[in-house]
Image (cartoon, rainbow, N blue to C red):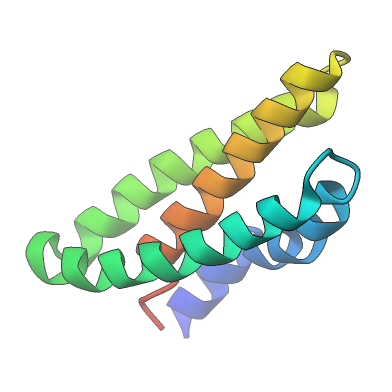
Amino acid sequence: MAIAIIQQLTGISAVCMYAPVIFDTQDNPDALAAAMAAIQVIFAAMGLLFVERFGRITIFLWGAVICSIGHFLACVGFNEDNDTTRNWAFNIGILLYAGVFNTTYGIMT
């Protein structure tokens, strides 16, 4: 139960809900949506291998650090005035966050 609550507090629902809406404002929204789906599947499979090798606590701690970096990059993307920098920062942040979340927190429930 606690892991499910922690998963929701990380904001994955908001990211998955609004990422396609924000991708629609960019040049190639279909490729970005496909990349996000592919990253989620591939990284979830990697997470199944990592949890046996490194253990749950290590996965949680590293996941929290790297997910925070993804959130920070997405925040920079939202607050940047330059369109190119904004798009790159947001895309990398969201894709990094979604992938790492599925590798770490997503496989635990």
